Image (cartoon, rainbow, N blue to C red; front, side):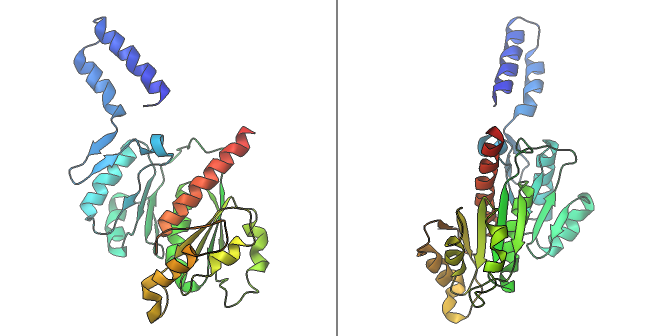
Length: 264
């Protein structure tokens, strides 16, 4: 609980001790402060935004539509924006019946339900992130990263198809990249683009290897190893096809940087 909730709790307990409040009324008053919602199929973490800055994100793959609906309702009941990844078109078509305001990205397979009028604690501090793709085939992973950043409230620049096979394309986009607090670089094949980008900018670069590539690509393993071996000191790497993870890490970096700008 935050400081305000501690003060509220102390006030309520003193009322119970003084006989001015019943135990039943205390329990009813504390119910909204619960940190977990048991929806039967899941234990929804309602305290994550306080601890980690952003609410729980729902991984949709393998979950039934009924399970997703229960989880979404638990989050929405707390005034929390919903964000779900790996949502299939079939899942979306069923979910949109009960959540018509949801925003589906069919390429990135993400589903967002914004809470009308909700203002985040970082609303006045907008982080800036660039999402860069090596090729068009990397778009599904890049779109997952972009949607993650939009859910986090970041300002997102999207730079497509600037892989190393056409090296003249990247310098033309450097002005956009140099304005970013963090950059997500999505690449398959040999995974060389994060190192190249890292050599041009003074911010963290999060490499996201994709499973795009021919046989010896080993479903993205070669791109992963290439990025891990980057000689650019500002490059770090997340797992194969992990657009959400890359976007989330970049979003945290950018949000914290933006907050510091407002404080100074």
